[in-house]
Image 1 (tube, rainbow, N blue to C red):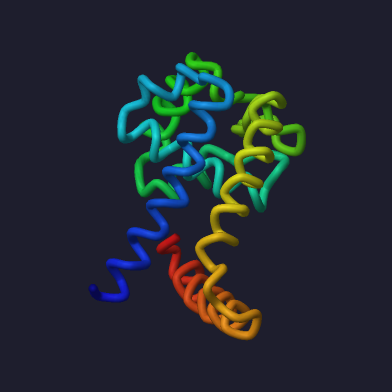
Image 2: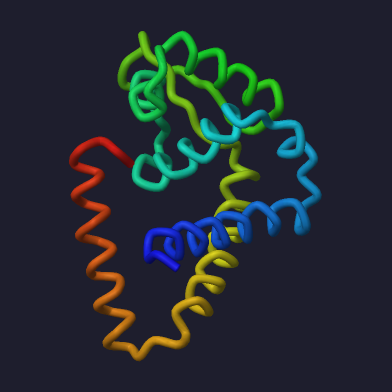
Length: 152
């Protein structure tokens, strides 16, 4: 099997582990009714909030999703109505808003990320410590290059 397919399947397995954990651990029914676009928005926020815990601007979100600010705003409104995100005024710029997760969801995410981290460690268990370090180093190089281009 091609390496890109293997990487894709492993990545998908990690994402599925997180989603399954959320559903099994907390019975979060609000995830069940998400459309593909809503799921994409939610996952993008989850990734962005990792490096911007204070919140994400609508402009940043729309740029990452490659949609208009209006389309991003509609998607955020739908997620707000489901209780999955909050929308507050940006304290440093009253003209913009901050999108974030409610505090209880942040705690759930932290726990789910630990489950994913354990699954990741299990995936890399066949590697020696040196191989694992080299693998993670190569992933970091690839990630940084794609991130610079705005493709992640």
